[in-house]
Amino acid sequence: MSDRIRVLVVDDHAMVRQGLRSFLEVQDDLEVVGEAADGAEAVARTAELLPDVVLLDLRMPGVDGVAALREMTARGLPSRVLVITSFTEPAAVLPAVRAGAAGYVYKDVDPPALAAAIRSVHLGHTLLHPEVARVLSEGESAADPARLTPRERQVLTEIGRGRSNREIARSLGLAEKTVKAHVSAILAKLGVQDRTQAALYAVRAGLA
Image 1 (cartoon, rainbow, N blue to C red):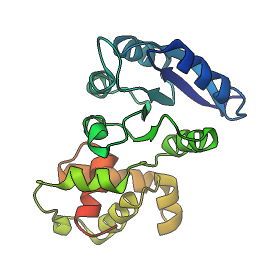
Image 2 (cartoon, rainbow, N blue to C red; image 1 turned 120 degrees about the horizontal axis):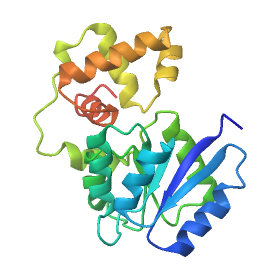
Image 3 (cartoon, one colour; image 1 turned 90 degrees about the vertical axis):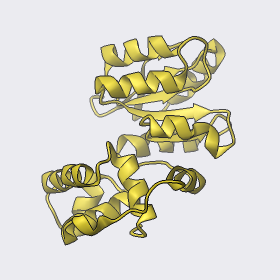
Image 4 (cartoon, rainbow, N blue to C red; image 1 turned 90 degrees about the horizontal axis):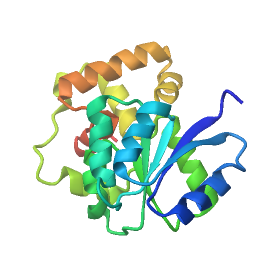
């Protein structure tokens, strides 16, 4: 099926990888296209396979998940990264979110919730715990969206609510390519690198 979401599973434990693969492969819309056992292999496999979503563990020997994610971002790889971690403290995943992760789930997540998270990230959503957003915004300068046009403010508000370009287009009655252009302008004007940072900006500015 060409419309399947292609997933790369990254974890240093073979049994964990096999468990994730076994569950994901029974989902009609998900396809595991590869596995990686450490960060270096994760980067190489992501560059080779260009999966839609990388399911990435954080704690691995050698190159860890955060370092791998930074390398993927630096290379401009388009895959969306969903961190799957055993850390329960939001602060523990902050480096991954700052490095470009689209969201994170805990390893004890229910299988249906994991599948839903993969689908959500693939659609362009950001899965960010409110506490993570709060900690990320601490110490940063207050957001000032005054430099944005009224339409850009509307789009930024929708980004802050975690909506994808398609959903924003439907909500605001715009073409999806127009929303994409607005998003690019917003990122440039606010001096942020990605949608996650823009979403945090919207929250801090009180727009979302």
